[in-house]
Image (tube, rainbow, N blue to C red; front, side, top):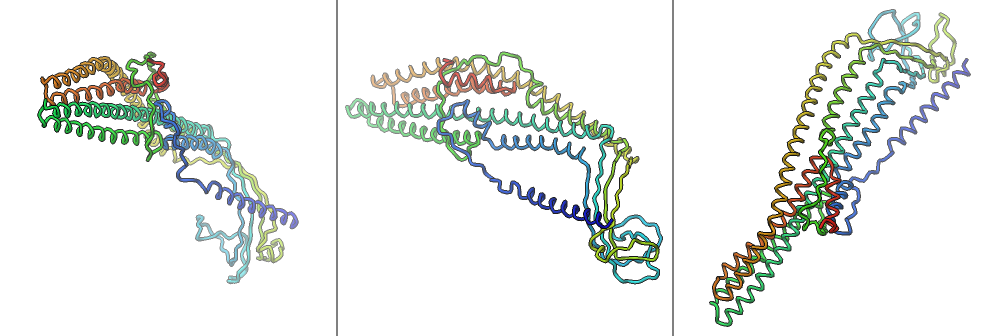
Amino acid sequence: MASNGHKLLFFFFFVILNSTVAGSAIANEGTSIPLRPEITTPEKPLTLTAAVRLAESAFPKVQQEQAEVRAAQRRVTLQKIREYNPESLISYQDVAATHNRLTQTLFSSPAIPSIGGPGPDVVHMNAKAFSAAGFIVDWAPIDFGLHKARIDLSKTELSLTRARYDLTLLDVGVQAAAKYLDALIMHEQVAVAEANVTRFAEFSKIAHAEVEAGLKPAADSSLADAQLANARNDLIRAHLNDELARASLAYAVGHGGELLEINPGGIITVTEPSDTQVTPPILENHPMALVGKAAVSIQIAERHVLDRQYYPKFRWLGGMNLRGTTFNTNLGDVQAPDVSGIFPVIPNWNVGLMVDLPFFDIIRIRAQKKVVQEQFVAARHAYDLTIQELRTDDVQAQARMRAAMALAANMPVQVQAAALAARQAEARYQAGLATVAQVAESNQILADSRVKQAVANVGVWKALLQVAAVHGDLRPFLTAADRATKGEGL
């Protein structure tokens, strides 16, 4: 019997040693995690589609949501382990204490350790050695559906996390596309401002020639130079706005702190892209609606967990232990060597079934069900509000789309008229029928008209982007943008 006890003791220490080594390995796993992953700067100027794809892969919020989805997936596995993995415990004790004992009844307390077995014939304070080691397995596989309900709740939380990731992916893509279109407008403003500087520089030469020939007063050359300086100031401001817009674009695609170059291709000239959003949207499948639907499902899953909580819990227990002591009495205790006070050698085993039912929990469960029911009602109304918002946004986006296309169609007429007026003003000036101020005004109107044309042309794409965002799918928008960038939509 003592030999069996030593074998069990050896097995006990072997398991503890392996558990300690495994715990150390888990603690050291993944300690060197870079706080800022390295991001490679794009080598080529970005197209609209490339900007959106880059944002979907490099923007930190997207990567954060991806990690949270993976964590939620692992939580489902963790919940399965929690529900079906038996509880277990290995324990070893070595105690030096006196053994004066009375027969009495007390509630358990860590301050008053229990004393088993008979005590000595007289009270004394000599210390004895006591030791014990053992393990137990506690398994509760039958709980009337509570295990499955908790696992289903974790799966529902995973669905909510995925829906939030899809919504973040959509938001990031829309934001990147919007910032790209803003940068495109600034890019066109720089081109307009450069053309305006060129026109005023040419007019300044004409004014100086007229003054030198004695055909115009000297003040005209000064006024022409002033208008040229003003045009150059406009160009400086246009360059500033362009750099600010490209910096905002860089942040939107996950490259904050850089100035990215853009490659608009032919997108600025396409004012009537093919209507890729012809299919009526299913707003219930929009990522925002799916988030609301998942929130409702969580409340249903929590209520299902509560429905399964008020059942008895069946627990199967089994284990083995070793005991040792240097204390012996004359009442038939098994003789054990002195070393058993440190190394237990007397074995025992145990198996059993426990049925637990915390019957007062019914009060807590009923109260909690009322809370969950109200949360369910609130989540359902929030979902209904989301659907109404999406429907309203869809109507407004369609109206903006029609207005944007009408504005873009009318802008060439305005630009053409402004260009004609600018040429006529210069001709009238050379004929002595117009002043420098009139020429400057006509050229400024032409520059403003060209800027407004660029804004109107890009406004068509912004309106189309809003429609795609409301529909919850950027693929048709990106397909049209890709064709226009390559010149296929011309």
